[in-house]
Image 1 (cartoon, rainbow over the protein chains, first blue to last red):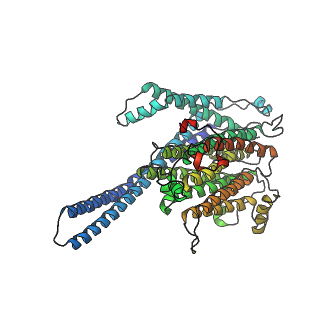
Image 2: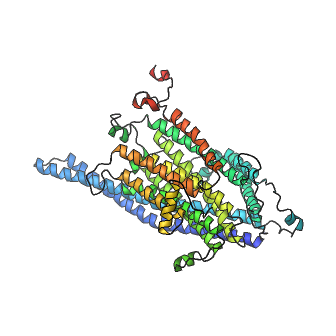
Image 3: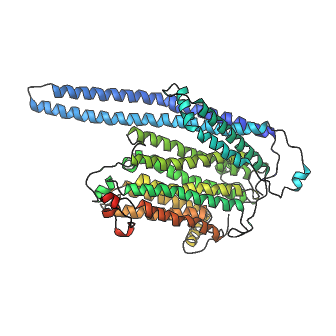
Length: 440
Length: 134
């Protein structure tokens, strides 16, 4: 079984709405603290560093233009002024990047929390306005049969409409924000309708999954006797492998033609014609740190999801004798839920750090309109999107772990296992992306 | 997911380490992944081995990145994704796209015109480059 066949009461669904309000509050608090609070301080520091740089530069210009009687003294003074300009420039860049770190982190957390809240709250609200199900003996009698679901088709249709209108949706949003873009209300409406259908599909799927259903077993080769969902997940991962293989093959094709820092050092060519992201990232601790932390975060999150599954399947699970661990993971149900929450937090941190790192790269001129920038942002962005979609699924799993009477247990733990396969695949993809794009 | 004992030359080694420290194989795998990630970052970051004058050459970095990638990939796929212990059909399924990925890397990835004289002959597909040379 992959569920507990419980009726999920409307008051339970309303908890999803309450949680979404809390998520919005967290997002607003993070935005206020990071982007507005610390961001304002950092902006002032950046402005001050910018003024210092301009002053140092003006001083140097003045020295160059002026003539003194003592050429040696003039030369020494000019050298000192040049040094001061270089130092002021470095300070200005550091202050700018520091400002970007806090502002990007604050904005990213706010946007992520809004999406989490919309995903959680609207699905919860949609389900809470559904009539309570009557106790139906017939339904329970034949629950061993599989009930087909239209939800995936509904979600796919919603996504299609959303994407059809997406370019116009973006332009309309920019127009509404007062930027110089013309609103395209037709496309905007199409995207809104698509998003609504998508969310209804998600909400419906939540509802169906929470009620539980029979795990289907494959009846023919090559997966005979295996859970169909698990086989399906592996087939899905095959297609994902091909997606990432296409990124790597195009990267390799371009990379072999570039004269990079590596190629010059290896004696392959003379003049550097292409700067890769790794050229900007790998030389200093500060620039390499976000990518390195993200690598560790994904590995830890892979382990925490394994622990969630292990606890769910362990019928003899007992709280740890360590007081802190016992407090964090007091019961089996809460242990599974809390491991999932830790995984969610680590994945969210991954997204925040990735966008902070992107903001730094863009500020340093590494933009998407170059070959090197294009492949870097597309490949790492596609990976980040996979992480983010995984986080949305994890939100539902946390909800399920929280509201079902026994949460995830030995009967329905497969859900964590199959999601874990996806999550580990995302980790596996990063194992290849990190050295290829950040280190090499 | 199994509480069973892993066997085999590599998985057995993981199991022995787990038994040695009194933890499960997932914990050992986690530690190994963390260690090798640190090793990978350090190999790229440092130009000489810390505390010595021994230079870390580009070939060495390449070697480290590839070997560490294989070790980490094995650890994640074998233990976290349970391929070691699950029916072999899942391993076959996981390996199936590797053929196509390898073909893409070879056929597209190494097909850059610059590869005519800059890549070793063995890894350069025999494409017709006349459109470049003409």
